[in-house]
Image 1 (cartoon, helix red, strand yellow):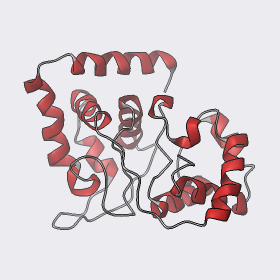
Image 2 (image 1 turned 90 degrees about the vertical axis):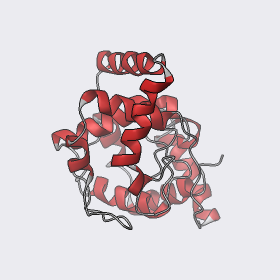
Image 3 (image 1 turned 180 degrees about the vertical axis):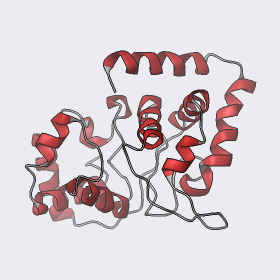
Image 4 (image 1 turned 120 degrees about the vertical axis):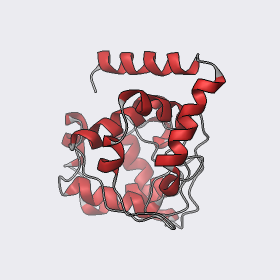
Length: 204
């Protein structure tokens, strides 16, 4: 997303926040209807395959929805308990721009909860050093800062992280050019260490 586009999205979200409570309830209603079955009522998933999105910046969520809507990012088929199978491409296409901004503002206002992961502390320590050298510039504070307008990595579900790292390695997910250049230089052991670091909570 370009800087100008980020400013426009941010301005749009700010406008939503300034609306009366009745208008903001639309974001909650959309989240309940379209997202909660997979991501949980507050954006914190109970399934290790599904990411926690609570606390992500609104810009990040809108950006992700745009990638899914355009097809630049392919969603995995998923069937929640007591729900129908779907994927993020279908969900995103069912949301218009206003819906996306409203649901983004809703989840941005929720608190991210660290997933109860089991992790290798020794490997996580190695991952911390790799993160500081390769990733900290864009995923600051150990990947825990939403203001970077990037997904929160610290405390994310380990199984989800493993799956996404595999997709990134196979060029099955889009990456910014700067990230792709750095990611391609990582070997499998370094990627495994980073996953353990993020699964540990990113040192936070």
